[in-house]
Image (cartoon, rainbow, N blue to C red; front, side, top):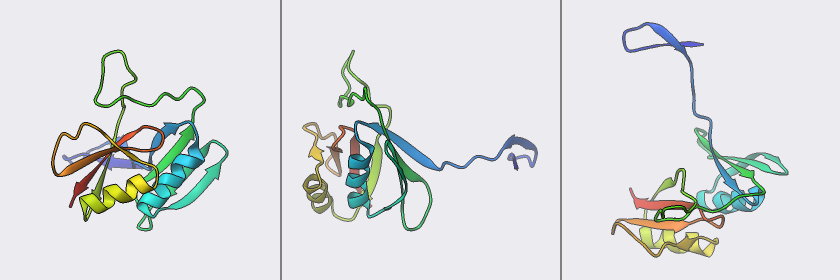
Length: 133
């Protein structure tokens, strides 16, 4: 399907973001963490691949096991594994949400750059941010 640009001209095929994929040492373990954190459902599962989707649909999260996975360093350091992306997750209560994430296996980052954002690491070491609505 071709999509029209702002001038009504058809100039590119249609695109729709289906999922953000996180590499990790164990796809099922990390998917389990995010399933509990977000309340999402497993929609597809293989030994080294899991797809989660929210109840309202939309873009999902996928997890791919990688034997040579190295967790990123945050804040970034020269010559260290760099993060490629991070997830921003909106919450109602920053303290309550942070404590819940930690109870599921997240760890709070030592460096917190803002008062209204909480930076944590998932069990595979990916940084993610909780922020108030």
